[in-house]
Length: 315
Image 1: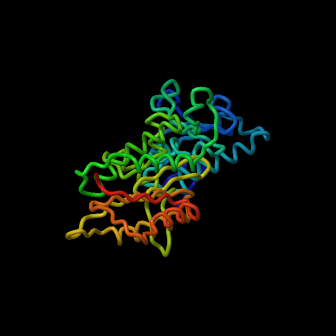
Image 2: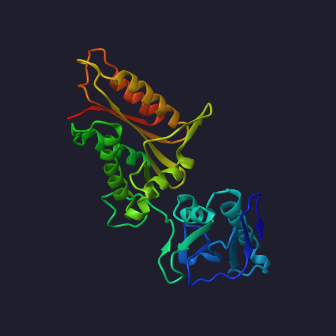
Image 3: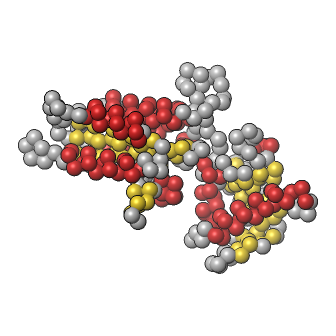
């Protein structure tokens, strides 16, 4: 039995696997599939504040001691120690995270029993488009993915009807999602655990809230959060900062301050995330003076910090 400082605990008892439950298996997702992993335990919805847990693996065999210990630690951590308001809902959420897939203990949620669909995260691999049809393996080239997204943002049409940063984010989001989906060759459902944004429906907002644990960068006690966040396996990520600079009087704009703030936020983001895209769109025309150092700024940010700075004006 696992006991926590709060009211939640788990107890060894029977679990009806013909109804909704969570299954734990042990294995290495990098080299084997779900079917090859060792079944460890099943968890049922809590009865009051107690989760029923039924071991599938033989707990009396010394050969299974390492697996049992790993299972106990996972049960304690996700059901008790995290101290979530609703640990059952959080456990279901965890089933679809990258952290779940790259752990040795893998959680899978069965919505209507063992014969129903299994909901769980999966290994995703970036495959170059020219070889995607010929291979189901590959390595994740996050730099190429970041460059590809940057190229799309540099060349996409920008409608002049955008009036706020929310409008800009709504316009950029499907571009990013489509690019990532194609690169990783994953479904829309799997994409929800890879690309995060503020969202417009409750489910999207819930994913966004959970993603802050993986994306927030804390400095001087202040949390810095992206506008769009891409979370990839092996702790790889792309943090996106989006800004819409407004016109200010005849020939003026908020661009000077917006550039300073956005680059500052991007530098902070680079402390935790290997790639950052800083996308600034200006309502006013961009001025070009002979002594302009924009190209040096862009190359310096990329070469030293892997920050892709893209500044455009509305069409």
